[in-house]
Image (cartoon, rainbow, N blue to C red; front, side, top):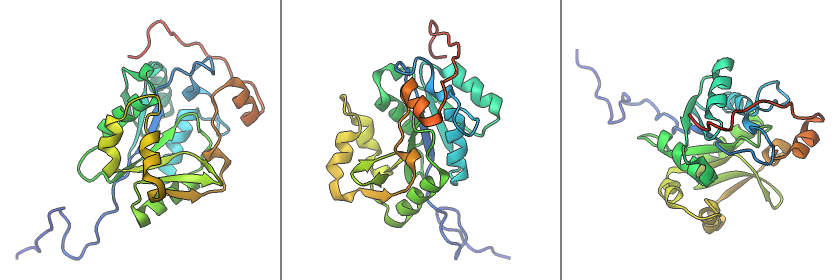
Amino acid sequence: MRTAPRDPAGRPPGQPPSPPAIPGLILAGGRSARMGQPKALLTARSGRTFVGGLVVTLRDAGLGQVVVVTGRHDREIRASLAGAGLPVEIVHNPASDEGQLSSLVVGLDAVERPGTAAVLVALVDHPLVTAGTVRRLLDVYHRTRAPVVRPARGERHGHPVIFDRTLFAALKQASGPGGAKPIVRALGSQIENVPVDDDGAFLDIDTPDDYRLAFGREPAPMHVDEKSPGR
């Protein structure tokens, strides 16, 4: 008996196409100088670390692949995520001191492959964004295929942000202190600003004061060996 031919993507005739692959990137490569200790390892309301909670949020929102980009605190973040038993990939950015854009480029290199339609980029200092917000951003991207999809509240823009694959090359070639911002600004009305009622999408926790305001307590001190950064 002859079997029905498959299309080039390997699907049998009549089977609907698979949804586009959108991996999640969590950028956790910063020095956390203003916090005085690794933000990624601070505890959020969930009892998980900032980075661990974001992994769970992105997974709960339906992302099949989540990649954490580390930098100076690579060892500590790897140990924390391994101890929590979370399904996540980790890549190290040896040039993380060059800024957030360098970690984005490392992350894009890790997820760019045939079938990747876009990437959702989350920042470790926005740990309280909800899975509902992530799902809403994904829904809007699937419907519009806009080059950039981001949460919005009035004139404010938050995180995470979805970047379509058509921007990957430009993001990798970006430079300067503005990073990806000039690329995003140049898109103008092509950007999908998604209204969300989620304080976590706009809450940037960078300092001990930010932490106290968000959680009503002091950040617990931790020991980090700064003499041997990275791996």
